[in-house]
Length: 334
Image 1 (cartoon, one colour):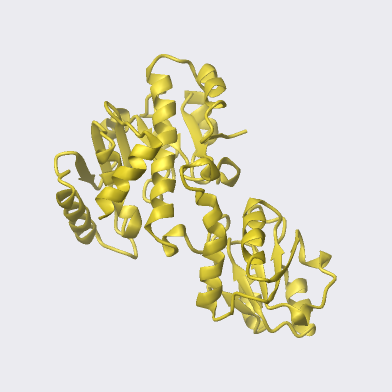
Image 2 (cartoon, helix red, strand yellow):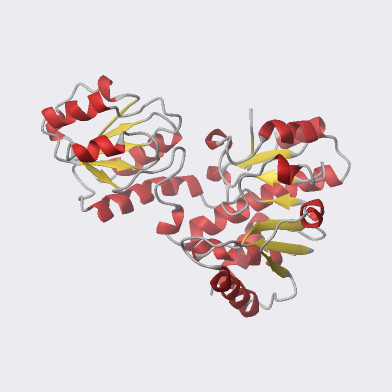
């Protein structure tokens, strides 16, 4: 079933990795299909890098990926690896910015050829400097590119609204006719607001808690969507919530936006009930299902294919950037 869905996505994106070598992670869950997506798209070679995580040890990881490769008849196309050596990095045309491979730093980049490209696997405005050494990439003329999620064959970014709805359900809140305050004006908040409005919720979007002039006790949920720490919910804000009888939930859509420990101390409900890392989403689209994750992965790989063909074809760094501006799914970093 999933093989057919993947093939359909590859066809829609016109994804063709013939003669290209891809380095990606060997993850668990839905993301474990990344190597298979690359191989089914015709990659010359796919290196699937795995390491022990809280989700699986190396033996389990290897077993997961061997099973997927066998079920798709791709045993000869995917190589499961546990070390990133000079030869592999030199061989790589497309290096995916994924968790197990991060940080993509000078120690890795120094071995990569200048025609290599790095798809971020998210939009350019979401760039996290700790993911990729962008300055060193520019020095080596290695392209680092985001993907315009709303311009893919399915609007992947629109799933942000569905993801918040899923989080509200998990937190125990209803999803209709509630007063919603979103803190953090950006693309996340725009999509979430439009989605929640459909369920007759009353919604306000602000940049900082101090700008809210409504009745705090009437709020059912405060959703944190900030991505740059400019909308941090401070101790002072938390005390204001408590003194004004806030009985709802603070929903961490993105992390690093609240003094989490102090909120717990003041018995303010926060969901998820743990600290979320700065510039990370609390949940991924995997909570919604296979389709949005598939198109985000495959779309990002397509961005890599477009850029890689240009560089290998002889276009210089600056000319490639100029031409990439014309592609509607390529999101260039400023």
